Length: 319
Image (cartoon, rainbow, N blue to C red):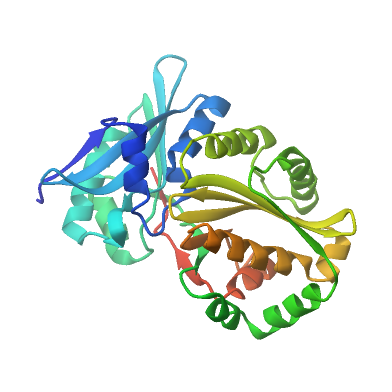
């Protein structure tokens, strides 16, 4: 087996952040700011691991640990591990890493572990995880990744024809765009998100967690973290809004909302297009547009794929 180990909670948060910035497609749930927000909201303790081969950093992994009733341990690792410089290791190295994660997240009567590995779906990875002692319990995560390293002209050309048409209509509607890099109006947006979730029957991020995550991102002191709300206004009336969290060289779409008028005039497309431009100017190289499901949310899926992004699916959820 390769000479692989995981160094847990060594070094500083700054050291972690420097390594995190080397990940081309970092995920929000593996950021330290997310771990800290989960700790303040639900009592999880972030555990930061640097994956090393022969002592050299290879990747990162964060688990969130919580003790219940003083005896029972709940551990989760969602959308990790992540690999430095985009170099996904060979299958033998992956197996060595996940065997170490199985030891760090044991399954027994006093310990429960839940993992959503950031690995592509496929039989080879499924077989590897089974060999490491993990049992698949649910499908993987599906999202769309948008590459922001292209120039603005190429990004615009990559939009689907209907997407571009509706964007042009929104650009002619005379909407005013507000860019808020501190997400000061987040409580207002989360109230709308709560009502939207009740109406459409989906589970939304809670307002307190979103605010704590915003606080952790904005106050981290790192230029690689942050939160931005992009809002389209018709006069003084908001008609569409979108919240993004920045982590490392990436950002994640978190919450979007549009009024009936905003849906009619394509304001959501204008908001996302403006966000793409602003994030790119701030050095963001990849945008995670969030979950898709062609079966239960075909409209959302079509909208996100219309940006020209790449649809990906992870291997599954495991215990």
